[in-house]
Image 1 (cartoon, rainbow, N blue to C red):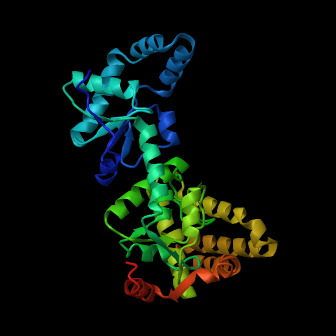
Image 2 (cartoon, one colour):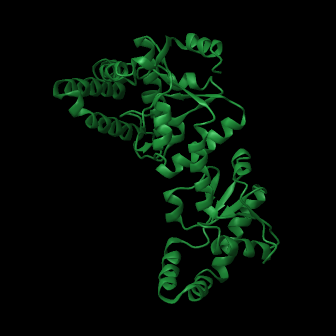
Image 3 (cartoon, rainbow, N blue to C red):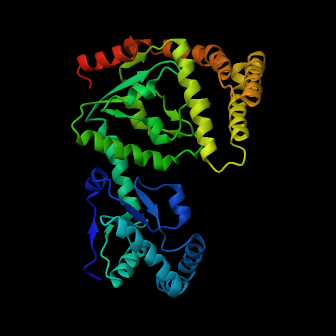
Length: 366
């Protein structure tokens, strides 16, 4: 069908946060997709597997015929209806497959048979991802980075939310960037992280920002990592240190890792939310056991178990602040101080939250 709509205006898709339909199989989607995307596959994993075998053994025509046999009749109607339902609530939606070829074209044709027009991405997933990777690399010529550092619990993420020209890498990675930083929901895949970073850079730079502020993360954030060229560029950025008193840091960690985290577990479908939270916290402590050392590890665990006992018996949570402060003093602070000493030449300012904001404004960095 010659009148099927195509677009490779990827920048407009990013800036408009266009909703996308990924018609690839679920296994492909799970490896990585784009922001604002839903997976409504033309073929499921098993169907795709069978068609792939047929393609290798007998060629494209036979594979295409098998695909129409597997995804015909009732199945075709169900999958076309799923696309129609999504388009009904997202009229500006577009669709794509891996290379923008047969699967997305067939999906377009089936929708056209039902009177629905939709744009498909020229070159599909592969072309769009290549564009985002390229834009991430090219972006380094278009902005000056500023890193916001500080000890664990100093409130860097809280401060970032007050800065318009920020890119929150932890949010893109769905991880808080520490041994205890795992969220209740799974961390994003490496490909998803890279795609989300590309989106964020394009959107921020389109707003005209010449400076972008990032939290000082290093290259890794949980299991994902910054692209090599981009990480190298950030490593030379000036560093601002947010200084926060210990009692405030304890409160910040307590609210996020205990109060808020337990609330998220309660809202989840876990059978025993408190038990699941405890299990995850103990696992996080086990991961740092060797670096913490035997004596300090056992002391930390004892403080944690005492807090749990009091929590269960009386509902009081404040005892958790004891192990949090111990963890900060005995583990995070010495490790951070050692790392920051090696980069002292990059530090351009130290101060509390208001002082840091004032410095950024006065230096023209906001």
